[in-house]
Image (cartoon, rainbow, N blue to C red; front, side, top):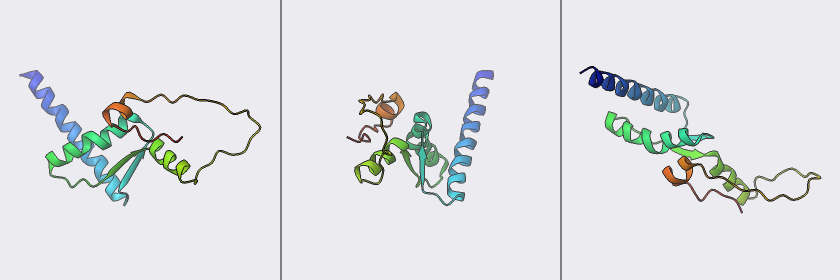
Length: 111
């Protein structure tokens, strides 16, 4: 019986954290959370909406990963790297498992 009680307490703590974080965004007057952390993005995009529904909390918060925002800015010509004397360089992007597979956020790359 002790394990079941511990599990219920953990769920209660998670619910309080979810409620607190959702309310903090609403209190700030924001409707979007931009995260640099793939796991945080996953929480805001995948987990919080489910718990909010279970708790009867209105959830109208949009979650975005910063790479989505930067990609859109680059494509719109609103973001450019500063001029420098460096040689052109080829880089490789590593998709985090949480962003690419869990949050299905794969279209954020700028070309």
